Image (tube, rainbow, N blue to C red):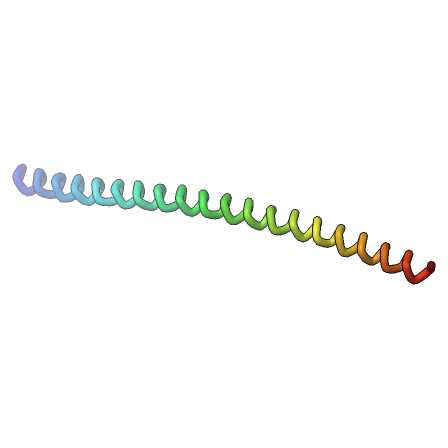
Length: 71
């Protein structure tokens, strides 16, 4: 009886170790995914900032065009 119980405990231990390794892989993947999201967010912010600058330039050009039309 004891050898059967020991074999069952060994199997349970092996499966627990496998689950632990899988959980560690998932955690590592989540960290990588989080870093990718942070990088994408930074890139999106840079694009947004550039768009804001471009909009400011366009508005300034529109203002200059209006001034030349008035004169």
